[in-house]
Image (tube, rainbow, N blue to C red; front, side):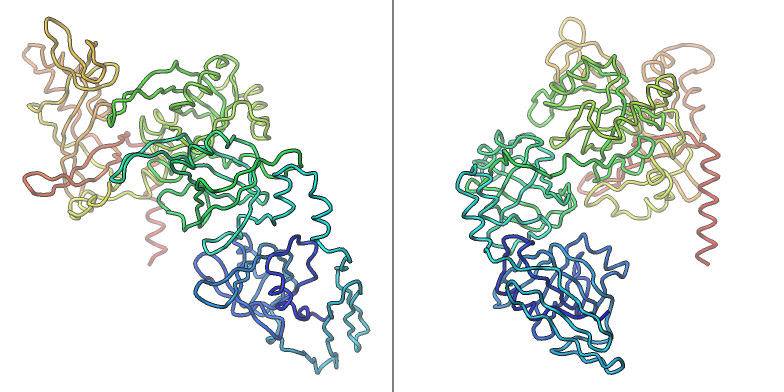
Length: 625
């Protein structure tokens, strides 16, 4: 079958820069020329044999290009597009939003007329005439190709005028202004309207800087193709739209601005982020069918949380609620404000459990609901959780986190079926303790970034800009018995207490007399085959190293006898191998910068896991030779 481009396709596109509907477009087949990767998207020249225009494929078509479905000098059929001006130039830029491959690479670039000598076939390009079915005849082969489209006699403008009179404002917006897919938006675009579902809403936050005080909140928006974008509102816009935006509802949005997303803070996969100001237009889509997807989850099994520890990437979790604590208040250091917090333990089909901390409104609202029904083992799905290294692995909600209780999704039904039939009677192990190091903090945390001590001590600039994290296999070689190994801490907030007038201890954080206990602040020397270094360890980590609590060690120190039980306990803790997860930072002392190495997690050696790691290391060395 002969393949060619649509006659005057580029002229038709230039004459109709923003079509009202893709169904009104004539068949538009162009040749792909000069295809290349620019940034993370593919650009090309769209050609109809007479004219060319610079164009860009949507990011979701990258897989088609990589697989070879779309090739340089190949043909594509364009179903939908947007035409933008290139800043400071008279040229146009074609943003393809929907297309399909028609033909792989041709032997040459198509010019005004293409003649194939071998088969003596002349390809006649179709003419665009309203109401007439155009034919492409392949005379030698006796084939007649009929384009798919038939032009309607009634214009889109007439249809819009007839249908829009009695519509609600949001529906009228949908009819009078073309809805753009999120993938087509860019900072250089003019007017646009998007139809999106609000899939995540953050809390209203206040800030203070050199220009004064203000407020801000973020939302995540998802369109019908599943593309997401983050939108931010400040001050007047934040106050105007905070109550208007309701989770799960669908909106038409226009008059916003876009900029390149800050990779450090972006939470969705989009090159751009949106800002809405007080002049932006937000209309709820009511009384019409909506096909915008609900909140999208990308669930991570609990036993695979290790690689995300202390990383920037957020995770989604689904699990069965095993227990929920009552709400408590944590005093924030910056402004001494009390922040509500509630912890719950969640399990999944991996037979692992993890502690999830709910903060702020989630602790009071969804947390209270879960507390009330905890005995029924509800299913909970949470989007956008931060993975911390507290107690090995733990999870915390953020302002943008979303909590769904007993959601109506296939994963929840599957989990409920498993728990009722098998999971309820199974023993569950916490991911943060009692497991092998690789399960506890992840292969990436314990093994993949394993270094020697000399790697840290031999690089004095490590941790200069931001903390650097490493894993080390080393021995405790010295714990000085004369050091101040602990401090007296409030049992409520763990802050240091002072002796109160009369009796008891005063906590400055809680502003009252509180019960107290001893907590470690221990310094010890660790050694490996390459060298040695001094490290700091706090309470939980020091307890694992010494083998007892600070209160118990204090009692041993006070005991009298021929054998010094205190020093004997410290001696027993030395020359024991451990796996350490450490952070490296820079501290300034007497105008000199020094490395500070802090133990963030410690685990005993699991020799089967260690052997597996060493075998893998040997294999890599052999492959590199």
